[in-house]
Length: 183
Ligand code: GTP
Ligand code: MG
Image (cartoon, rainbow, N blue to C red):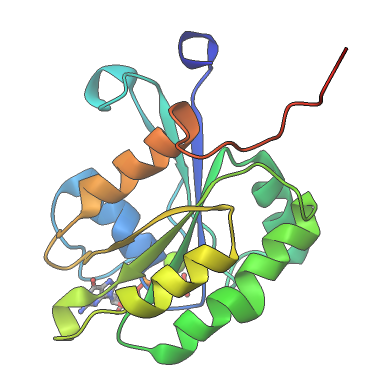
């Protein structure tokens, strides 16, 4: 892998208003954008400024501009998927297991090898953590590579989030497939 890769394609999905577009634009501008479009333009980060030195494409999704076919197409094209929820809105976390993880499985097949990162955004608004629930979810869904709580507003863990996504593709920590036995 690594040096032969043309780049890492990171897709952000999740319920409306959880902050997907804000996360992307915060990363790029290193400040919180007060107003954001429904969907960010696809962004390419040149290899020399990424921690893993690979070109990185960041792809936004918005239900306001895209339909189910668009969504499934992007899920198929992604090397890694960030499912974003808002730590401030419990429903959006319930929908991770109730909707988004099943959608990815139904699109890619239950045995798919696309790593997924769970991203809890808006930690600036709360004084609790969702990690306990999320760690439980991680045990139930092996495709979940890691999880992170962050804030597009304060920039907390924003660069980490995109680094984890790159790393999940380039250096997966769990076996993503099982080698067939041969004799
Ligand atoms: P859709 O495109 O409709 O799917 O929404 P989205 O997930 O792209 O959310 P968006 O980035 O448009 O943000 C929704 C609202 O949440 C906006 O008012 C943002 O300013 C706000 N927001 C986003 N991230 C944060 C955050 O980390 N903290 C706080 N306090 N507000 C945030
Ligand atoms: Mg958006």
